[in-house]
Image (cartoon, rainbow, N blue to C red; front, side, top):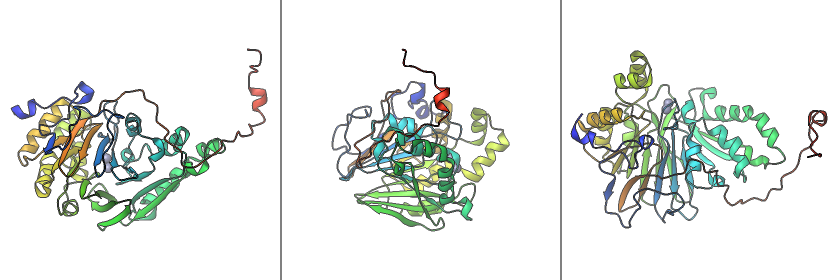
Length: 382
Ligand SMILES: [Zn+2]
Ligand SMILES: [Zn+2]
């Protein structure tokens, strides 16, 4: 371990309050930023992009790390919200940001691994009960090599699996808000898949597990961020970064021996996972060197102080630009002048904020099943 790695802040779940980086700012800030990002106290500015890691972790969700998800707030007049993947636990982090549930209706999936999709059930069913009341969720995602492996099939099956939840809500809840609308696109080419309110989303193929995974590039007001999703180091991502990017968030797994030791996986299984599906610190460093982003973020990393030290030591062998090891609730503010990374200071127990409804809906009491009359204990004497 070198002295640089030793001086890195500890993760938030271990008591740290700082972003894990020695270079949390690039460029010249045009305003002052509080040391920590406090939700509700700092509005996003016009023509700014704010990127928050809702889930930085792995398939094995922990209290310290939710599974895969990245939130993007856009400083356009609409203040659009986009979410890239929605792994288990990420909505708990979303709720802590004091952002309205009602606006969270655009989800871009990189692929259909469960650790990237787990909270779609919560967003569709449960969040409809706490204010996501105006209409459907829109999900974009890649097709597969056959229809049953594509996003459309996944979404339709999810909708079907929610039949009881949807039927139970039918009456008290606007039925439109229980729907998911899928837009599936061809994985094999780099292409624009969304363009609205000044925001452009481009998908590009990546190399991960099975054909059918993509990464995304987001462009807004001459600002850009690229998100790898899950991938081995690959050329389509490098090409998608052409012209330069302000922020590149790339996945990074620790070296196989460390992954095995910290996760409980066998060394054989850890080696396969890394080689066939993921990116080592040195490989991530090589990608950063090829892309040369203003700011780089490592993501999807099982975190511990030992792993963080090892990752930075390995990475520094090949890349010496600004890098942040992201964790849950690492926040990047991107402007033309600068990119700054901070940790958010949040409350653990904050109910989701409904937001202002755009569609009027009057809840309807449903007729209860006839047998409940006998089953219910009379309460009129208390
Ligand atoms: Zn995956
Ligand atoms: Zn994953």
